[in-house]
Amino acid sequence: MNKMNAIIKSGLMAMFVMWSMSTLLGQKKVKTFTVDRIIQAPAENVWKVVGEDFGAIANSHPLIVSSTYLNGSLKGGEGAERQCNMNAKGTKYVREKQINYDPDNYTFKAKVYHVGKLPLDPDHNFAVYRVEPIDENTSRLIFNMTLRTKPAFMGGMAKNKFKKTIADYLLAVDHHVRTGETVNRNNFKEIKKNYQS
Image (cartoon, rainbow, N blue to C red):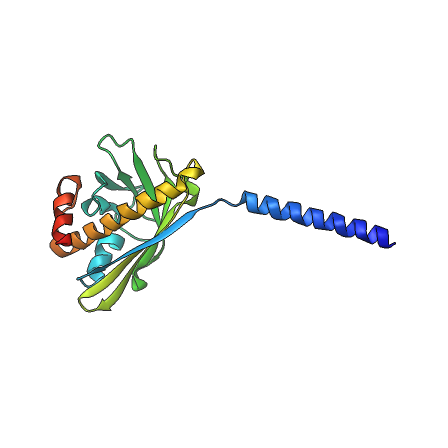
């Protein structure tokens, strides 16, 4: 009887180990990072640019050549969709959808659902935007990204590149909110210099 119990226990233990391994192997590894920036502007002004005017990200992102609303979306809000073109031909682009849209708390999630020819896994890529009021004339823009690349081994390199890109984006948002000037590849280098001096 003791021998039989030992065999059953061993069998159950083996099954548990195999189940644990298959569960771990089935999980997709993702990279996450957070970038934030204090902006000398009221939270509602920052929210207007990143949350309400979701489809016009090309006005405040130095790497996005053009952007547009998709599928009948006319403004930011729950379910709004946009395409962000990374080149003039529109062959490199990302399509995103706004979900968990919460204008009272200045936050939403941008779910990536199509990546064109970019090496991203659309099922595991999203960003959470949040604007926190600090005082009447100051706010903090927080961008929390979760990403997975195809192939997955590129994730570490992509994370570092994306982190730098997002830091530049938040600086561009800062400039656009405060001046109304459209930020693009042509003027961003000069704009960035002014913020570093």
